[in-house]
Image (cartoon, rainbow, N blue to C red; front, side, top):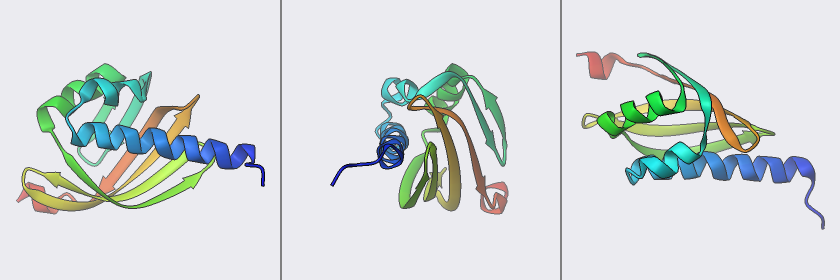
Length: 118
């Protein structure tokens, strides 16, 4: 049975996003950076970052850890449910990653920030 272009695109998108998350978990920021477009955009509950280098510099300081619970794919879009360890607090979150040419072009992360604000 042949794999369709859509299935291949979804597989590749999923691999890129999971490689990105695993690299962040391992603090391999060079590998994480390779998964991002130079002009990528991040939007989150606590702010925005424009540009891959700016985003990676922040990740080097924050050293977040991700525990992926579920992965959804739709062409070049990947959605994750995960727990993010933020300063010792596990926060259930969702990330929506949009890829272009097998690199992350933009993503948004949503979560309830109250546990880290108190």
